[in-house]
Length: 165
Image (cartoon, rainbow, N blue to C red; front, side, top):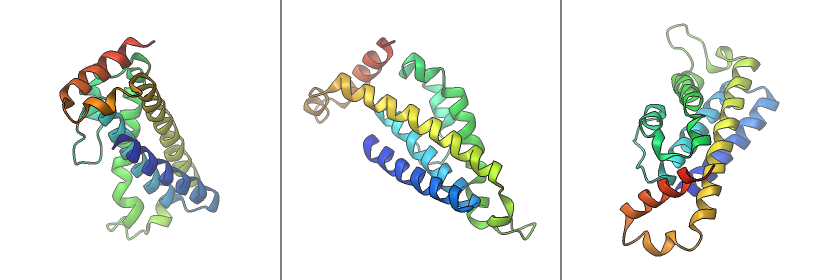
């Protein structure tokens, strides 16, 4: 599931990059938000935490920071902040601002889009690195016991990932 989430996040990241080049800044913001949400939910799944069904999982990451390796833990506050900021832009980047009667295209600048995109890249790269580390540590082991002992997977993931430097 985590791998699928990251694949979906990567696809949105590609679309955001193309939209940035094309000047579609509202779309960059929306795609970046979706990619961030998927990547962070993947990181939770990697350590055996079922992600919630809401868009900003930053508080869940902070609450469970001990489940992640030190290098990832050091990035959680920054990633949580990016997630929170982009979550606030989710609807306006799609629908505009009804109160001001402004469409999405008039709400976002290149700087807004670049900030959203750069934050998304940072989060995606961290979550991809986390998945790569988990894959290396669990090659062959995880698939054998996942079906029978899902609680063990979470404990093993946390132990192995947090023991690496």
